[in-house]
Image 1 (cartoon, protein in one colour):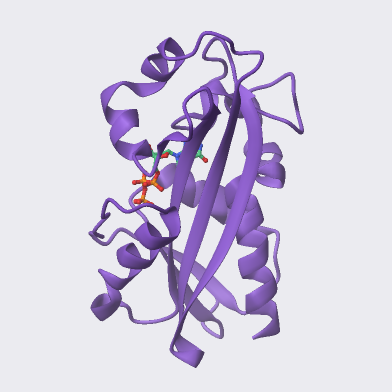
Image 2 (cartoon, rainbow, N blue to C red; image 1 turned 120 degrees about the vertical axis):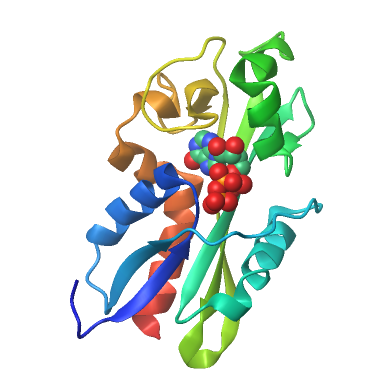
Length: 194
Ligand code: ITT
């Protein structure tokens, strides 16, 4: 760790997410050390992942000792499930999982899906809460494929790489097109300017 740099805390209990962000972070030259903190956050059931993210960060606001961010992600099957599971993604992953989602779909060729991420940053120097969003569009694979990544990755085929699921990509390939990668780039642009 570089003692001359400020700390930037990523509050998450999900090590897969942290590893993706850490790999992106290592490509940058910025005045921060990135540190994972697994604080118990509260995830409310709201209509948008932005409201979930805002509540999640505010639920630990009293415990923050420096600039800190959380992120909330959702997986949306736009066709044929009208956006389900969306804000219910964690619960659906724990209950019916990828197999359950695949069972709800007949026509994989015509399916449409996306991932969205909202990063909520508490930026200490300005005492401000800021949001950075990222989305990736794609469709649903008829079979679970690949063993990289996590969560819904084995059933999501991004439009940019139409032959492969997210779980068949390396972390750096996924990061270069993913919801999380895009939200992260916006956060980086902000931190470099401030
Ligand atoms: P936190 O501690 O950061 O809250 P979490 O695992 O609860 O971690 P989310 O609520 O943001 O994260 O994620 C909702 C669900 O979506 C969860 O089941 C994840 O596994 C899944 N998910 C999130 N990002 C994903 C990604 O990049 N690829 C596949 N699935 C993802």
